[in-house]
Length: 258
Image (cartoon, rainbow, N blue to C red; front, side, top):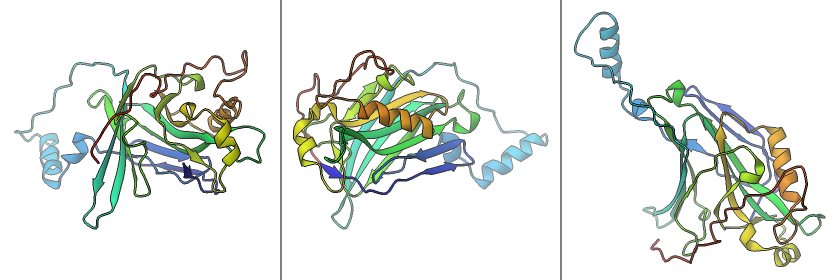
């Protein structure tokens, strides 16, 4: 089980490409970044000059036709690792999701033994992008996280590709995307023994629009803090029933080469 740092982080960055990232909670987090769209990869001084010439009446530049609109309602998580020249390993998580959808990833792990509840939220990271307002041309974007401290998944046990639908803002629609557990830096030996580890792990929430703010984080934390040690919550509470789609529920251990 990985330990989280005590420091609480609050960050917000708004870029010129229509990208927003945020984090409010406890623990070291790997910030989410977005891969460039094909249009950004192809930008060059020569291309810009040709475009300017076209706007002035020049010829020879064909505008890209608008493709048919096919709404995307699926998110895909892919885990990978790479050995660097110095022998160290870099671990990566790529998440492909619909344009103009926000992505929140976070870990649910044992809380400090000094706390009255058993579960807590760690390492939250959030990103939203509308591909610079070009969702019609680029209906998806890919966010990614990189770590040199350890994998985002349990190698040899978790699947390295996870797909999910049901992209809703409700906390009860959160999707488990790996089973690694994060905990407080001082450890939580008692709560770790008492919880059901299959209900912990990394989770993702993906939904339309820029949805994550400090109020949402507070509701998320209250939601997770309400879980019983076995991962169930009291019935008829304000959050509703949890539609749990844990990746380990129907998944056998897998063998993979790192």
